[in-house]
Every structure is written in structure tokens, then in C-alpha cells.
Image (cartoon, rainbow, N blue to C red):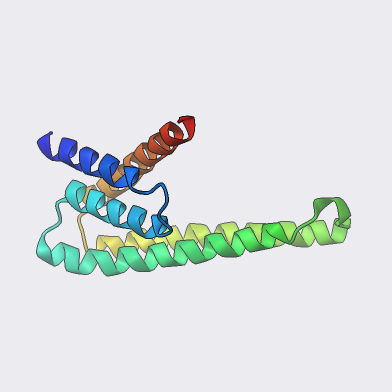
Length: 143
């Protein structure tokens, strides 16, 4: 409980310094890493295996997200023909399959590094971190 309060206080303290900093994403990533590290309580051996897998997946996920964003920004639904629309749908389905397969591969890789229970805890921790970040951003926008 004490660790959680310290982490939350650290999270809020660092977030308050974000207002005019251009390195927000890097700081958020650093906070996320600290949060996950505390929550998973990895052994040294687990950490050595876990972080390369986690970082590679995060990079792949970011690249997929950027690709999707780029494709959507170049898309004008109003001017699409039916044939073009079907092609876009085919691309969307292929993208979803690729994303799904990436998640499956990620979990299988994680199973070689950490126990299944910690993989579930990882997902719970990531969701909790994202909720806290969203709450903090909402508070900041309200000011």
C-alpha cells in the first residue's frame, strides 16, 4: 500500500512538470516503466528476459498505430468508389489480423520470460496506469 502511494505521488509530481515540456512521451514512458516494474516485482532474471520483449512489442505496436493513422488520414470516404471501399475494408481486415497475431506472438514470447500470472498482472497494471494518466489529463484540462 505504501509503495502504491509513493508511486502515485511520484506520478502526480512528474505529471505536474509536464505542462511545458516537449519530452512528454518519453517521460510518460519512463513513468509507465517504473509503474510496471513496481507492480510486477520482477526478479533480475525475469527482468532481463522481459524488458527486451516488452520494448520490442511496444515499438511494433507504435509503428502499427502510426501506419494506421497515416492510412486513415489519406482516406476520403466521400470520394471512394465501391471498389476502392472494398479494397480499404480488405486492408482493414488484414491490419486487424496482423494486430491480433502480434498480440498472440507477444503473449507467447512473454511466457518464455515470466509466469502467466505476471502476464495477466502486466495487462491489469497497464490498464491501471492508462486510467490514472487519463484522469490526470482530464484534471489538467479542467484547470
